[in-house]
Length: 329
Image (cartoon, rainbow, N blue to C red; front, side):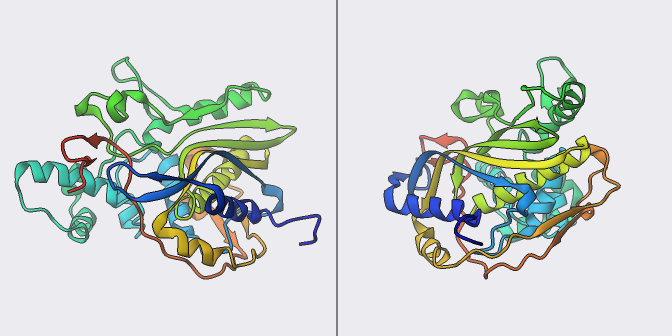
């Protein structure tokens, strides 16, 4: 691209560099992993200029696609992901499993044994594969005080957009204090930390734009995935609403680099972005509940090689007795 049109991926790369240069040092409670952090940043991607699947390292597209379907369809059991050989959520149900098995003093399966049993044993998967009160449930089945009543936020937003194209209230929230951290009763506390916790859509002159607020963002490992996921969600919602895709706006609270990712970040910063790929949707996609992963086609993705990094299983319910997050043994 010319000097007047800097590649949009440089927003991400410049943020990596800024964290390296000026990020403050923090220590993640419960894991003691060091990270470097900034607060209150934003990037924007015009979806008419390509799909922002980062090119300076290969992003796990299959995981993006199947996870987003998992959210949109309101699912909370990892069996769907495991059955599709997507393992990005394996750690958190295994974390819940270890808590109970450790308290019962039973033999603990390895994570590999646990996931293999999720795949082949439906009864075991039903018991141990659930991650209640996470994104899919909050988006499509938000619990209420009225017994048996839930709220489908995503369907409501699309209907409200149809009824009032100029609406300013089109928000989907995943942050429910009743189930989070020490705000929750212990029996209800989620062991998964809600990170990308709220988004809002808006009709801007016939284009649908989406702004995500992400309260905590692992910029090397998680953020490339989050960018692709919510950009794709923007495109899907625009199609269902009969609008063109507009912007994906990514607003960060705490955005950070873990210390064990610094060398990979330095390698990524040496690379030059390539042209963004494009997305095609099946024209048959008309309704939210008709969406399936096979309706999405990614075209012309030619990234640099992948860069691996270790996932820090951070957040959730802190146990002051052990000085670690609940479930980490």
